[in-house]
Amino acid sequence: MSRKGFGHLIDAFKYSLEGLYAMRNETPFRHELLVGIVALPLAWLLPDLDLVWRVLLTLAWLSLPTLEIVNTAIESVVNMVSPEWHPLAKKAKDCASAAVLCAGIANVIVWLAALWECFWG
Image (cartoon, rainbow, N blue to C red; front, side, top):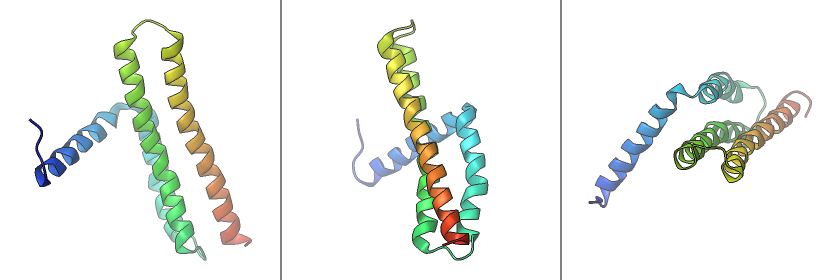
C-alpha cells in the first residue's frame, strides 16, 4: 500500500537514492560526475560572471547526469521487454542517447558563451 504525506516523500527520496546507487556502474554517468567535479567549482570561481551565468552553468551540467539516468532507465526497460533486436527497441535506445548528446552540445555552447562573457565580454 502506498504511503501518503511525509511518509511518501521519504519513500520517494529513498527510491531516488537507490536509483543513484544503481548508476554507480554506468561508465558514462561516472564520467559526467567527474566533469561535474571540475565544472561546478569552476563555474562558481570564474571571475566576473553574474549569478545567472553561474546558475546556468550548474543547471546545464546537471542536465547531463539527469538525462544519462533517463537513458539508462529506457535502455534497461527496452532490454527487459525486447531482448532480441527490434527496430523500435533500437529507435528508443538511440533517441534516449540522442537526448544525452543534445545536453552535451548545450553544455559546450553555454560554457563557450560563459567563457566569452567572462574574458572578452
